[in-house]
Length: 70
Image (tube, rainbow, N blue to C red; front, side, top):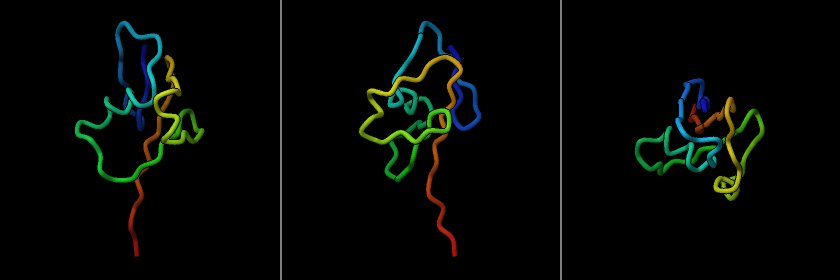
């Protein structure tokens, strides 16, 4: 199984699907204190749905963090 997170491929052996929450542990090496939003194949996923929303082979996650500007 292969998924993409912010354009980077993550090959997962022996998996057929994983939750968004589990996929985020691949992306974030350390627990995040900051706010971020997640889109699965372009559709927003609410934080309360991270554990129940499944990521399948070929899916793409976008992790978006706020940018401060002036």
